[in-house]
Image (cartoon, rainbow, N blue to C red; front, side, top):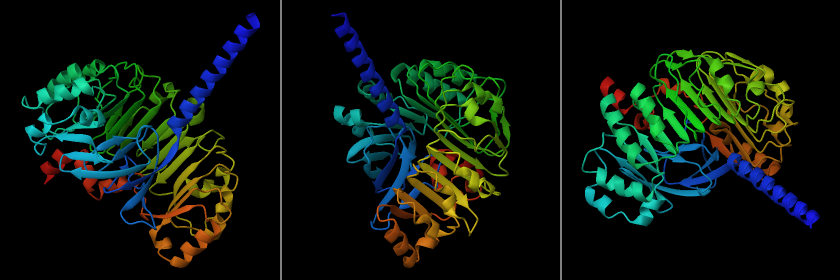
Length: 453
């Protein structure tokens, strides 16, 4: 009898461990999503959309569960319930995904009140995000309360065109009494009141702050917080030594800044649970990243001026996703030969190449490599022919305009999706400083751009 009990406990333990491993694998899965009907990109990686060669009106998008997609007007989270094929239709302040209402934008162009009155319970249940682009008016609050009763965890993005701390804090207080979102995006400048109000969102998993509070501040403890995005291409980003102190269990961190860095990089060392790290900064200073972040699975590094200090980058590690997008001297150039021995688990590799004689044979030891994205020079394309394990290959438009090049690659790699990329690396985000892209106008800088005009 005792033996049977022990056997049952052992079987139960095996099942739990198996399910846990499967859960983690699903969360980290690299996914190829096919999209029709809208300009959709992987948020923060503006180079990540590629046109299929054999389809009209479709794009392929490589992403991971947990990432964010950005359209003309909306953010969409890549959760496991998001299908691999998306038909997206944006109508003014509404977005539909595969025929279902997925997002509502509330502002000057928001739907009329009768639209909210007619919303069904099923439509509300499918909502993924509510975006607020004007301070909340009393007339719309009863309808938001109805949505909150049926879908309190809907993501919320507050991008008010009126940059008022008083109105922001007023609306945050009201939202916290009605909603418990998993994601909260704040475009507006915040203060100590805004920061303290975050603790009123107990289920928060993702937080975007465009203007981190200045001084020696730190974020409050948020028990379910997994991801922080610090996005600021306007002012100097300030991150103190204690900024992350109350949230050491973070799994995802993105820092995008360009107007002068006031980042204490040692603040990241306490984040030993990091799995995904995305940094674009004038000066990156990461020492021995795989000693400090032993669970790291994906890494994106972009630099405007110079690569900065990234010691230990090419130590052997368990990365499955690596994206390197510098503006000047590439990380890849002199390190291409050591790359082959450093990333035995790598599935996705993206980089900008300025070497017309690049030999891909240096990647031959990357046995698990399935996705390869090369911006700029293609290099010696014949050395790609032996990579028959590739599921997906993206090279420059200029190279793939030549049908001879396409035919050769398709003949040698019959099971690989071969698509053109933009030919200009936008992944680092620094062209955003030169070209006022419409997507940024919609996301963050509406009021500022209007003011500058």
